[in-house]
Image 1 (cartoon, rainbow, N blue to C red):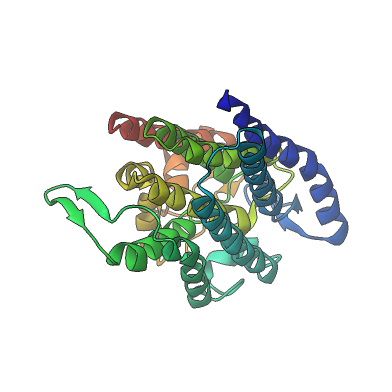
Image 2 (image 1 turned 180 degrees about the vertical axis):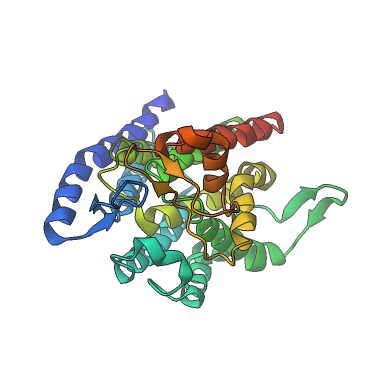
Length: 336
């Protein structure tokens, strides 16, 4: 009977897909558009910060779940955990939006730290955004680690590991980005799987909350896939990254989430070879293909272009990265 609660996921999807056309029109009218760096000539005609619509659709979908659970079924809900999670996502979403607006018009140079919020400010604000989960002492302090067995982290878990997870995931998720449909598609795959993990491990409520974000992302992806008419912006990437970390904490499946997140860790390692200053974009040609922008590989995007060779296109690069992500999702599935 409680499968009726899945209507909340539909609400998130419908809100996103119905609101984005208006958002796109408004952004184009006021000039809030960015360059599409993987298209020949870098046309500056794509609406920015579509993450605003995604985050708000997600929040309203979750609130509809709370309302249905409260008034229709009269059951107990994880109110403290749900509202702490919403607070984290909203706070990081606002940080991302401010970063977008301050870095407006600088898509091609955002990773060098000259545009948007200063790096130290972003990190400190992300730490502050983790406070809602810290103050409710979310998750469990016990964690089983290879070679060490079961470890009780005690007070270190809320005071150190939770902020580290939120800051690390929200920041790192922003690295594997810059291609039409990539960020949204990755979020759909990862959060869809983590929602399944939540359900099978006894946290059905967390699964529905996760699927609300998947629903919003799916509505967004329709407008963001190649050729994109709207970009996600940092509001989406920070929010999805934080959502991954929050689900891992609240669902107590940190190890599975870590395995699923390995492509992002590899992305950081590869980008570190270039001092975190090398752009992810390829070099677009007139025939719609992408060429390697550097002699060396500085990201999974570059590796995908290298593997695809002369047949590399933006769509193929994104799909190859998705396939790589699915490999780690399958490994995570085997850990259940």
